[in-house]
Length: 114
Image (cartoon, rainbow, N blue to C red; front, side):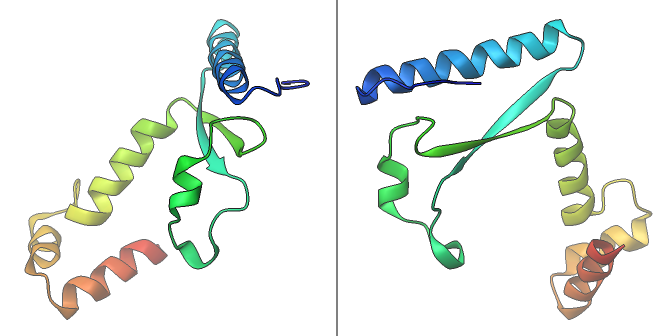
């Protein structure tokens, strides 16, 4: 784990970045490859974006690290294409998803619930 981050924000950002890269590399070396997503601490309420969140330095004080299996990126893309465009479905399902009407919304809700 990252201990005692530097008080200088620039140094802390560099230190955090080195720690993330080293941890990611160690996971690959251990045959348990991981990737990460940075989640802002004290994120805006109700999903509202805030300029303040964007301008925060990337340090352990400002972000949580969510570690995920490296395959997550591939899985996410596969699921996204299936959900949005019916990738892997029969032509009749794809046609319904391309309409852009109420039926499309209902079908997407059904896919999401499944």
